[in-house]
Length: 112
Length: 113
Image: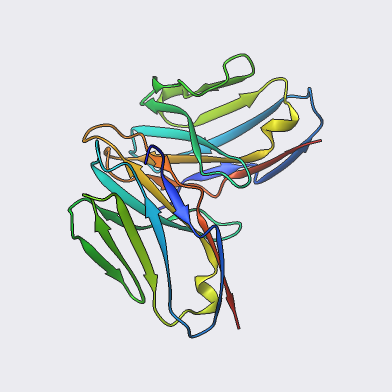
C-alpha cells in the first residue's frame, strides 16, 4: 500500500513570496490533516478535512494560509505572503478512522 | 499538566546501552496515547497506540508503558542500535471520535557507535 505522498520535499523562498504544498493521502482515507512543525516544537494541527469538507481550521492563520481538498482526495496548502516565522516542516497525514494517522515525509520550508 | 510534555529533549546513548524517556499528558479527558518515531528525512512512523491504564506494548527492542491515572507514558529501548537514532514523539488523543492529536516536542535520540 502506497503511503502519504508530499511535494516538494524542500522549498526555499524569500519573505512575502507565495508557496504551495501538495499532499496525496493513502487511497480510501477520508480524513486529511495538515500540521506545522516549527523547530523545537511538536507538530501543530493547522487544518483537518473530512472528505472535502473542513472539520477544524481553528489554528490556521487565515490571513495568509489557505487549504483546499478538491474531490476529497489530494490537498494543497498555500501560504501567501510568507513570513520568516513560517519556516517549518509541513506534514500531511491521513486516516481511515479516527484512531490512527499516517504521515507523509513532510515539506521543509525555509523563508529567508 | 495542561500540555503534552516530553523529557529529556535530547539524549545521546552508547550503542548497546538501554534507555528510556517520558511523555506526560493531561490525565483528565484522555482517550489514547500515541508514540511515533521520526527519522530525519522520513515520515513519522507509528510505534504504539495505547488506551488502557497499565497497558504495556512491545515491538522488537522497543516497549512502552502507560499510566492514565497519573498521566505519563515511558518508552524503553533495549540494546540501542544506530538505526534507533530518531526523534520520538508522543501525542495525546483526548476523546473517542475526536481525531485531534496534541503532540509533545519530542525526544531526539542519538546512538553513538
